Image 1 (cartoon, rainbow, N blue to C red):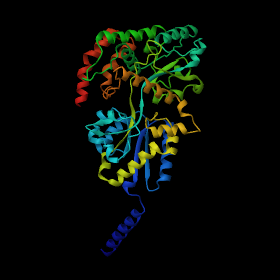
Image 2: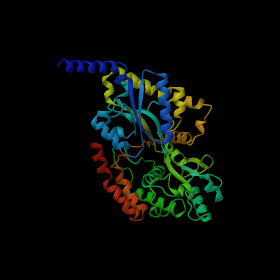
Image 3: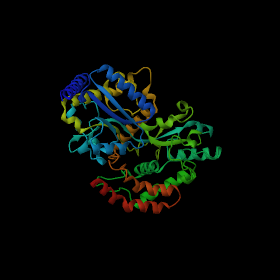
Image 4: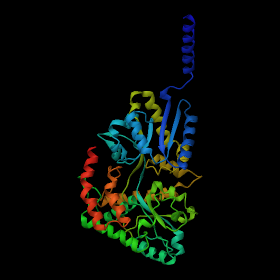
Length: 438
């Protein structure tokens, strides 16, 4: 018995001594994000720098690809095993019941005065700010100018008519080549809704959470897609190209498709797979009905940093989280490392740091060029009483199918424009109400 007690005492002593040399939980910050290899490399470099500057803390990075990240985060939130800080899309604050799972970042004492006054309104529920805005984004067009110039189109189109004229020239010069090419149902949906916003001034979803376009207006949107297909802008049917990943589509990488409509924060995925992209890929903004107009620009918070509610229970953990978030957004070296891979922040401190970087001209990047267009067009629309901020449930995982499935069927040639429009309208309002009620 004495021997057993001595062994137990020895074990306990060893455990106590060894624990003294370890960091406490409050000094360890777990940080989860999704991203490409470029984002992962930059993020880990910033984490290493943070640990050098703040040796009292350790950061456990949790990188993931985009695919599966949302479901994994949702599962971890339900089990209470989420990271201390985790990257989120803005709409997840609503679909994941952020009010129950995300900490009010006001409790961290972060200085939000360097952001535009309304920057965090979409991230606020019941007066609680549930995420720190990383960047804002909008869908715009990027073109491979080589395809245009080879066909004799030397000026980047500014209007839809100019785009269709370019499409006819490109298809005539090189059959099987298109001014844009293949867009998926999500991209076509935003293209249609942008076009309809230009012609009607209306958002997709109104303030009463109802579909905002009539049957006739929606059918005119589908007719417009047919116009783009008949003039060599889009492929005549998505049934002839079933590739689901745009950046790796061989028709994009072999330079048969001349452009893409994409979030300005995500254009690097296409840039990385296009030959000579530094020379050939250019930002075209949003095509207009008439030259000089600035309409049809939807935008949203691209992504945010959310904080686990567990941090509320410890002042030491809150201080650690605050220190890390401030470092990621205002430390000159960290901001220079992270660049614009998560988009262009509206935080004036962050922007000024990036503008002062001498080794890289971030303002010349496709992300920054797109950011400027998104912000200027959106703000111009506000002067016309047109608020095209993207509804928080527009991208809800199950609700998206209500409008994307009919659009996909139309793109494959399985239904007419009239039937596709009817299918959207018949279920849109009831399904939106259902997912909002949760």
